[in-house]
Amino acid sequence: MSSTLHALAAIALWATLASLGTSLSHLPPFLLTGLALVIGSAMSWPLALRDRKAWAIPPRTLALGVYGLFGFHFLLFIALRHAPPVEANLVNYLWPLFMVVLAPVLLPGMSLRPLHVLAALLGFAGAAIAILGARGGAGAAGASSYWGFLPALGSAFIWASYSLWTQRVPAFPTTAIGLFGLLSGALSLVCHALLEPSVTLSPRDWMLVVLCGLGPLGAAFFFWDLALKRGDARQIGILSYLTPLASTALLMVVTGRALSWSIALAAVLIISAAVMGTRAR
Image (cartoon, rainbow, N blue to C red; front, side, top):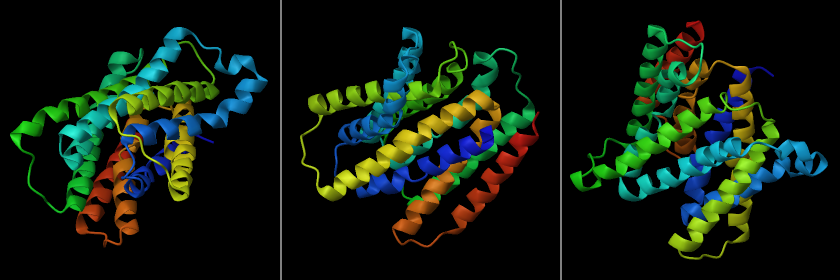
């Protein structure tokens, strides 16, 4: 399985997160994230129990994993609470652009060509059209909520830098992603206990939480790690703009809304960006 297929598998799973999140919007976000991350980590438990070296990683690598999985969600949830969700989500989708631009800075022996930058900007334009078009052109946020975009920007930087820095630390097995998820999930549950009201989950809630944990907050992280280990971070970053497009399109289908011209235009821009990215050697 090539790096592109691994990246596409992660993107396909992440595309389901918005639809699952909409069905679970009545749950506190830290509770949902914590449970899903712990459930997602369970996929690596059998390997960790059978082979102790599967989770035997240096403290610096473990800190990087928690920084990526927990830090990303922590700042994103703060942003979603203090800024309009659609715009905050759009700012958060700067992370593929950050991956492309930061790759030469954080990874040795990697250069940035104009075609990479153009493709990244084209991809972000497509993401913006997909997200804002699905919203229906609502008005801009008030000035009092602008500060909420700062944690959204921070979460984008965290995910991009985590994705790149995993290639700078000593090589670690992909099964260690399960340990990252387990600790990040535990920290999210601590945040839930301190910051959010307690709730009771119905059987349907548990079923959807398990799906969320096994998919976008579980297997997707394992596929993402495999893609980064085997592929070009600049091209993977550009390809990642398929995530908001697929997520928005799926959400519109699930909610019964007709696909609009904005989705078609976004698809053209993002697919063009992906093709340009693969040609930028």
